[in-house]
Structure formats: C-alpha cells, structure tokens
Image: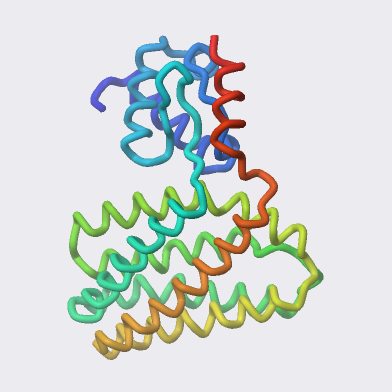
Length: 250
C-alpha cells in the first residue's frame, strides 16, 4: 500500500485473522481497530479495503467490515479452483523441478513423516499438532515454487489463506469434538502416504502421476473440510451476521 500507517494496520489485522484471533464473521470496527493498532481511522479503512481484495474481509454498505465467512456452496467453488490450479502447479513442478526444489520439498516431507509417526505412537486423542500443519504448508509451498509461475503462486497463496481462515476453525473444533476417534490416526497415515506419492512422482518427473496424486490428496482434504464446516457451530447465517455487525457499528 506504500503508507507506513496503512501497512501497519494491514499487517496487524491480517495477522489477527490468520492466527485465528479474529474468527470468521467477527465485525471489524474501524474506530476500535484504530485505537487498538495506534493509527488513525483512514489507514484502517485502507487496510480493510486491501484485505477485502485479498479475500479475507468482506465490506457491506452501511454494515461495515467483517472477517470473511462463506456459505458451503461458495467454499466448494473456491475449492474447485484450488484443485484445478494446484494440480496444474504440481504438473509444472514435475516438469521444471531442480535438485534444489526437490530438497526444499524433502525437508518438510521428512519433518511431516517424523511428526506423524510420533503423533500416532503417542496418540491419546489429541488434535493434530500445529507443527504438522506448518510443515504441510511448507511442503505445498515448495511445490508451487518449483512450478516457477509467479502468477499461479500468488493466486494459490491467496486461496490457501482464505481456506485457512474459513476452514481451519471448523476443522479444529471438529477435531476437538471427536478427539480420540480412531479415524484421526488413519487420516494422518493416509496424509503421510499421499505426500510421499506426490514427492516421488515429482522426483521421477512423472507429470500424470503427480497430478493424480495431488488430486487424491486435495479431494480428501476438501471432503474433510466440507464435513467439518457442515457441522460447525460457528457458521453464522448472513442475517445473523448482518445483525451483529449492525449492532456493533457506531
């Protein structure tokens, strides 16, 4: 954005959203954010407009801004796009990868494998540790980097950020609610196998196998997220959300 105050507001609000401090549907009141961040209202408004362009915030006339919340149908459409783009990206990665790219994938892959093995070995009903999620993100990012397409990378990162904001709270609560279920262990074993299949296909420059492995992996993720969102207790109707924002807007 170029303005130091606007950049400060943008980074602060973005971090709060991505960390889960600001959950989907939370009203983002300009004057309250201004006091919290220590900047005037204008930079906050600029930041909210940029976050709206990023897909993390929605701004409604007369109602104000709130953290992005999606209906299931819209979430499905977003996942269709992510599926198409990420499968294309992994095909490009299989064609264009360098030894350095493979090493960048191998480091998080091995970390994921070790962490999953430890998780399974000591499983007592806990939710998936954040280090597994962090390494999973790094693995997918390394694949996108290997595709060597800047525009594709930017769009995929944008979609993954939105996915994280929209789906992560539901998935976490769903895991907490069903902690101790044997499916949690089975799911993590499958994730480890899927990641290995993707890496092996890229390593062998097998474009079709890489796309097929990535599609299976993403479809499993999408299926789990849709299931979690469908039973999530934080999903708010558009009418309820509008009322919350209206009540809190000065």
